[in-house]
Length: 414
Image 1 (cartoon, rainbow, N blue to C red):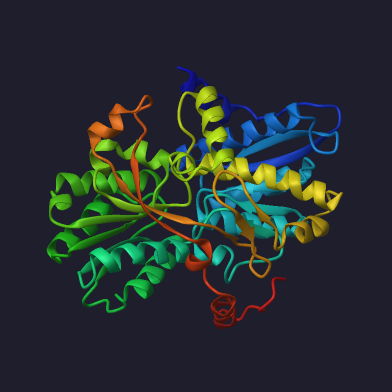
Image 2: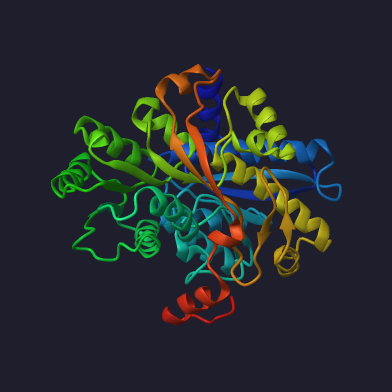
C-alpha cells in the first residue's frame, strides 16, 4: 500500500519541499509509460537527498525545493518541461530514462543557461558527439558497458555466434556498435541483427526478432532493450525456450527492470550495472551502505541504480554550489570539471573534457528464483561476477576526439 500511494503522489503532485527562500531543482522524469519504474525510482532518490540536505540546514542556509515534470519518455515533452521548469526558476535540471529524452532536454537546458545532469542515459552520444558544456552524465555509458561485458564474453563465450536485437534509437545503436567493436563481432553475416522499432514496439515486433534469433541458431542473444520492452522480450524468449538454447545477455539492467521481468525470467541472464544495492556491502563502501539502509527503511524496498544516481546528483549539485560559492552556471561547471567524489560506491570523477562520470562498472548474473525470494524484500536479483575500473572501461581522450571529428563537432565542449 505504501509503495502504491507514493507512486500515486509522484504521478499526480509536484514534489515541493517548501521554504520562504529556496533553491529550486527540476526533475524531468517519466512517471508514466514503459520506463516509469525507473523514473519513479529517480524521484524517490532525489526526494530523499533533498530532505536530508534540508534537515542539515540546506545549501548555504537555503532550503532545496524539488519541482517535477513527467516526460513520459518523449523527447518533445521533455523539452517543453525544461521550458516550464526554467520559467519556474530552477537552478539546475536532471533526469531522463531514455537517451533521446536526455539529449533533447539537455540541449534545451543549455538555451536557458542551466546545467542538465543525465540520470539514466546510456547512449555514447550524450557525452560524445552530442555533448556540450551544460550536460553532465552521472551514470555510465554504452562504451563502458560494452567494455565490461567484453571482458566477460571474451573470457567465457569467445568465438560464439552472437545475434543482436536492437532498439531503434541512439542508445540501442551505440550499444550494438560498441559491443561489436569490443567482442570483434563486426561481421553482420556471421553475427546478424534485428532492429526493433522504438518507442512502443509491439509484442509482435519483439517476437519476430526473437524468431530470427532462434532460426539463426545463435549461441548468444544480445537483447538490447530497456524497461518494460526488455521484460516483454524476455518473457517471449522464455516461452520460446531460447534461454535453454543460448546465453541471453541484456547490456543494462536496473532493479526496476528486474522486478518487471521477475526472478524466474532473469535467472542466468548476464548484464551490467553501474551500481546495485549489494555493491556497498560487498566492497565495504560505507556511504553506500548507509544510503541502502536509509532508503530501505523509508520505502520498504531496496534502492535501484536509478534512485542512487538521482540521489548522488542532488548531493553533487550541493557540493558544487558550496565549492563555487555561487549558483551561477559557469562557476558550477568549473567546480564540477575534474572533480573526484565519493557517493554510494568507490570514487568517481567528472571528467573535464566530456563531463562523463568515470566510474567502476559491474558485470552481474541473474540469481536463481529461490535465492531472490529468500531475501526480505524478494529483491536479491544480481550476483556480481566482475568489477571493471572506470579508467579501464571509459574511452580515452583520443577516442573521444575521433568521435567528435567524425561528427563534425568541435573537439572542446561548446
